[in-house]
Length: 224
Image (tube, rainbow, N blue to C red; front, side):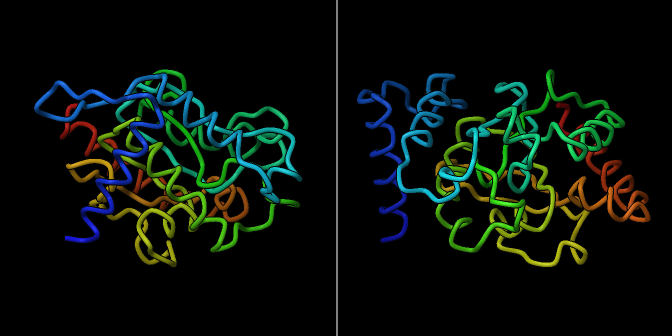
């Protein structure tokens, strides 16, 4: 009960920070507004004394359609993403586009893309546990704003952050239910090998294709 009260209190505080002080609906809104996205982005931009931020060129917030029902979450920006301020635009981004295009998804039309970390780790190193823990509340709020029906987690870092699961080789392609602290209903989640891993290990393409086919089946089942 104490944890539940803490969660609701945190949510109310966040609403007030966004300028929301009146609730007239009996049920919570299905989606928050684009202004909430802008406020979340601004709150990240206003963070100070962040080592990642000091070494990066740009905040990499998101890409795609904010109204999409499918959300893709990666690890952290790379070199190309840092320069452009857009997630998944380098070689791994091109591979991601190929992967999702194969099942009828398009980053500009029906998916929304973000990362666990909004700034590039120096030399593309793996994010630390402390960094993941620090940015997780922002990611949770990001998910709540988009309110997707399906989330696809690409790679070990995203899987560990959202599902607290390690070793994606053991559970990729399985469906899980994710409970976001700001939403009532659980979200369908699948973990998939990161596109950069596929580029390094092309023998895993078959595994990814089998996983993506399961995603397509789920999309059809849910009539997304």
